Image (cartoon, rainbow, N blue to C red; front, side, top):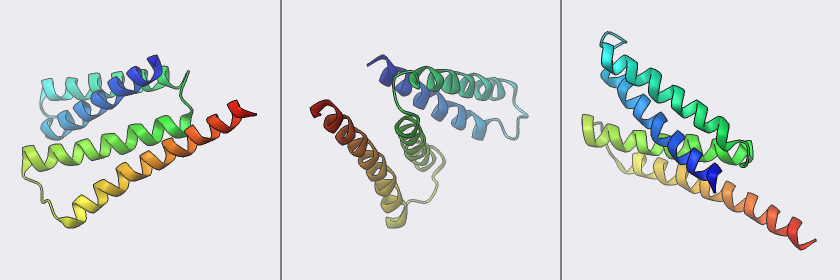
Length: 115
């Protein structure tokens, strides 16, 4: 459970860091630049903690997939980036891929515990 909490913090921190990257205007703003450093530093630290209990392939898929989807939604909501059926389909495919990877991993663990 601690691994998934660390993974959640890592995802939130990565999305925060990416948002600050947009606001930093090419690292010309001091506080947004510090936000990038803190956000990504925290994200990678927490990702390394979660890897103690969650397999790399699963953790990275969740981290990058959910982070990408949340970042896309922030772009749409905060910066009026275009939203279309293709965008929606892409987000659904990302989240679906994460679910499938998680399901595959869970199925393998269930098989191991049954034998």
